[in-house]
Length: 268
Length: 289
Image (tube, rainbow over all chains, first blue to last red; front, top):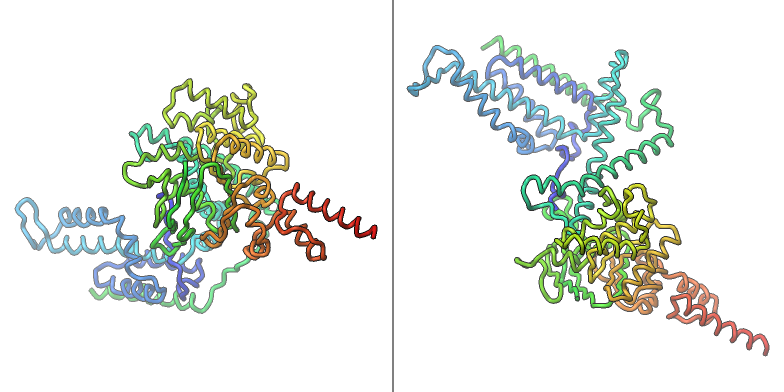
């Protein structure tokens, strides 16, 4: 059945310095990198960004090809951004005159700039998701958001819900596959018919799936209570997040990249 | 009605990093009137094999023949396979979905395109067969029933399609001893009335009691195939595969280890009784001397 083909998240398993970095640092550095990308005021200022992305790709053993996969779904937006900017921005020097519209040098440069900015944003964020397993990511997010507890933001609860949801997606997929097979064995047809017939055909799949999801949720809640789970208060963890040398080095590198961008902004 | 598996190999998610071959080069002929027990360790490929019998899984290599015709050939009506071969999954009560018991049991026959009268007749018959003949029960929601009753409703859902071959994946798993006996007796009745049965099972006592043929799977291949008395003679080989033997065989092994001549081929309670009686009478004579 087709359900086997679904891949979850886009974590690319490898053993590298980037993979081993503290998720909190990775999240913060991603934010810094996003700011840096927006800071870059001209094309030349993208050079440090490209250098950083290439270096990270080499260091993490994640092929550039994998990172570019994240860009593919955005191709229409990219093309749209480019086309709109090329034709609608103001400029002085006419590069090509198409008769019905003119392409100006300045607007072409800006269009390239904006499009590349989008590409780099996607590449930067996929670098994070490719090198960090979802569970570790939520863990890092929880720690980063935990200061917000003072304003009653439920950081721990949110992270727990996210990790439980992530944990159960494969289980539910498996369950769905099994139920689908069982109903097929009773002559159910999931593949033909018009839209309404197909929607109706989903009932024998969805009802048992919901029933089992609720059953599992109940069991899980019971098992968590049996192990004295009472929220995040005073809870210690198995894997304590710790910043190491590589995290400090990464921060320094990021600072250098931002400095280089600011410098290049001045120069050109 | 006969099913033949010819050199069937099944690989899950071929070409991906999660590629796994569940069964390899399996040749099996399920003959009419068989009560075939499919035995094997967890992950030995029993369930995968069972799902090939009614065409739910398509073999990566090899063919599945129903009365000599390849069921995956173009133009072969899959509904025909589903009608002839009924498959009851493990924990079938997890697939109940309708508002009432009767409606749920009717799902299969309705999908076969039968007339409403025929459907309702089959539903009544199937429910009676699984021991839920009470008409008040048929109008209840299946989710109000006990676990054992739900299992029987799910079973009725498959029986209502009147399959000639019934494939069951551990039909008695998780049932209490009484429901277990009732479930197995019901399957045995169906077999006596002419349904060919294929049952995946871990419980060797059940196999000893009900099956006319046992097929042992190991690591995706058939390791043994024969009458239960032949299979259970190789008790040690079975234990090496991480499998059990019937309690009578265990008793026999223990007695033989302690020097008593308990016959090798006794594996059912009645055989054990006559063997023990013989031993006892012999012992008495010995004592009298």
